[in-house]
Image 1: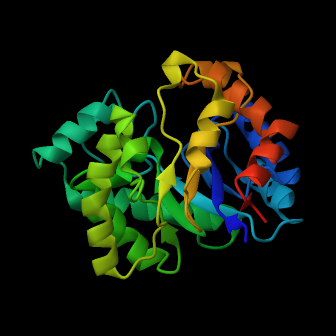
Image 2: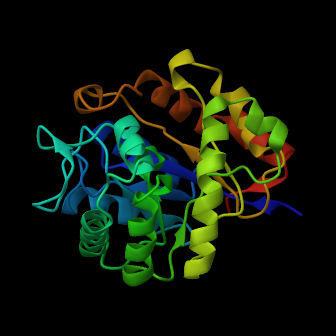
Image 3: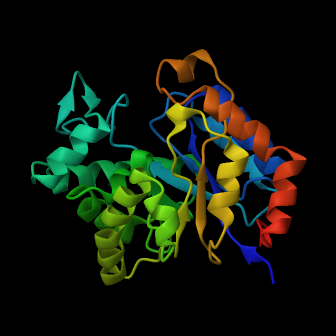
Length: 276
């Protein structure tokens, strides 16, 4: 039998070109989830309505909140700390501060709660799932605040953990995946204790600076991924807004092209995977 997985496009709301690419792939049945940055530079009532329209033919396509707590974005809450130049900290510094206990759980809880409320205002309902931009939901101190806010505002949503499960060989091929797996172990433990559902396995992390063959990577991501596993992706069309916000640019167009290709459909079939 086919395994049903979640193929989730992150960063809806970061730029108009990314939004267009994600909507196109959803309409063509090439994605079945996307997570929305409610503090992105291209989100508002019009972009939210366009996404809702794109999802309508496939009611099983999930819409989630992409909690954003790192630069170059600004907090929604007025008294959020720490910030640098009015922006969140860069994510490596945010991780360091979390590991040494310098982050205020209450301030982060308030910010995540406000972002959850902003999603509900845009879409008229809570998110189907909640994850984090640059995996911030896994960071020490952030995870406590994140889990508390989701439990209170969206208790029926599932949350993204970023561990690969038992596929040690695949994890060890990527230093980034090893770090995510280590962070996810504590996150899963706390999520289970809070009674929150989470995905059994995760794939999609890679070094985009090396501009690898995304089709070959996708084949690795799908191999052995269990039912309900999540593959993260970042399709998009490069525009000036994106270039000014994120170093992940041209590779987004490569992902977009592959996910729209016949090769991708053949790959799903060869791995007995469905997005239906």
